Image 1 (spheres, rainbow, N blue to C red):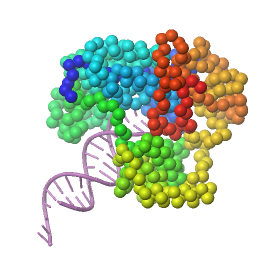
Image 2 (tube, chains in turn blue, cyan, orange):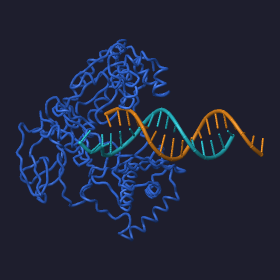
Image 3 (cartoon, rainbow, N blue to C red):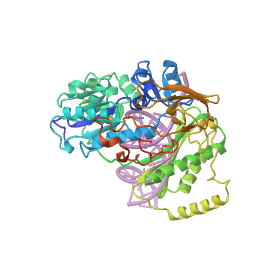
Image 4 (cartoon, rainbow, N blue to C red):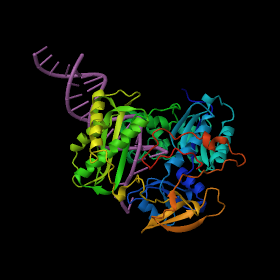
Length: 487
DNA sequence: TCTGGGGTCCTCCGCCAA
DNA sequence: TCTGTTGGCGGAGGACCC
């Protein structure tokens, strides 16, 4: 792939995606600061609405810090199933432009317009796309257009919020020169600090320093890459259907775990979740990885590569447990993770291990106290409420037999506060408080953001045509409802 | 202020075999 | 047979991204 003479690489970035979805779904939050993230004591911000950003709240910030900066914001837990559904609608619109669509996350993607036979008027294509997204989802996205991924991404960043920026090929270098080095993808805090110590602050200064100096400062691959980026040289193609190379799950505990037995139990549970994800993706892998973050935030990983790929629960469990044996956990553990890497495209069964697992399962069936019995998870870490268990988290969708659809504003001391409103409500809804055990209140499916039948609405949002959630979408967030947008 | 979760890629080191 | 070199692989950790 050569450097393009036309700005036919499109980068779409939805604006404050998670927060925007919540504002669209909850009329009382429109125009107000909204922060989506973990609401536990160790939660961090996933997305802040623009109203919250004004107060200095940004993603990756500790939730506790955000609350101090912006005490009046609505703090909500993420509803990934909803975000995934909306993302599917957006990705579907992108796929109409070109066969080459490379999703980077739920809210971001590159599109190769040239591969879609679009050479003329990329600006018009981008503007129409933005209008379609707005009509189909009610949300705004920003579009960057350029001759390379690097510039398209920088363009969409400049376009935010709710805009479009096109960078004409040939103007890259002068455009990039005054920008901070952090603008370049791959330059994070550590690299930026390295460069700063060498007196390099801007992209132009990276170019001036020369490739040899960059390689000396940052190492061969990274140095050459950063230097090339600074020159505006980026020949990375848009790649559709990237296969993932590893699958992992991890949990941070509200309170550090100190009991070795408990730690072992959690590793087993993580292995279970990991294998479930692995299997639902139809993959298997050779390397089992255990991740441990200790009380002092030091993080270590231990891994073991097996002779053959596996998706066998017993094998992953045993390997993870073995790796755990070799880790010093005195002082406490704040995070545990289990992953499988070195994924194969096919499941090459380890027949011996499979047989062993079946034996173990049979044994477990006869002994309810064994590994397969549903373990009690202490409240402070509960993530998957069991059947009959009532647990209300802020942002959660609920339905009341008398008052209808609403969402949890907050809960505590045996009470749960619900605001009854729907995405289409003209005005903020009424707030009512119930006992957490109130049987008239039930968790419910999310409501659609844009009602089918509204003028100009494309058909994608109708339940029948909404694509199913991506595989592996369980993400450990309760029952992964495959339900459509309409309840 | 006390730092999530799920990934990718790179580097370095030690081991082993050719 | 011994030694040095090289390359691949496994393992650990760091940096980065959204």
